[in-house]
Image (tube, rainbow, N blue to C red; front, side):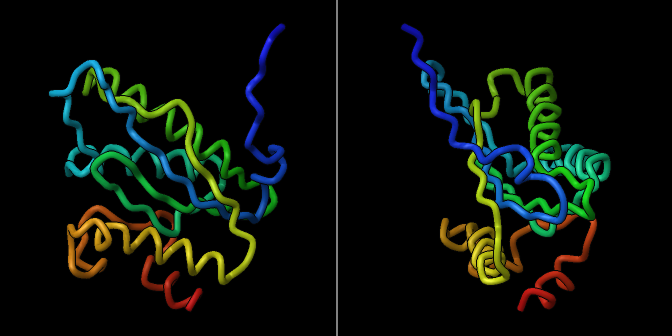
Length: 167
């Protein structure tokens, strides 16, 4: 008898068009190597990963209204532009490209197999998700105010304008 893991994903069509979703990608902890301490909060990694994210978003007709790099995970919201936007392909392409970069440049550093996603259906839900992402460094006691945190941003839109729009 073959056991199959139950899919926790929505059908692919839910990730296409003018839709938004919050994603969380986590680094895989290497329990066999307790000395392997990797962090996504390195300027080089943030710059390279942001470049990969920009390319994936442009290719799949998406924007990233907000992203935030933490030590061992990354939060981001991806929004499709028009009917041909594909937030799923953006997330998967980004994860594949950064995963390959890590395998070459940071051996032992890799993403967990899957990622968490939450489709955003209302303006109130968008506000909640944005606040959660931007306040993550404050909750982790890395900053007193989210505005001070250097490893956050947006792609394809202005973060300040976006925050005013959803307020």
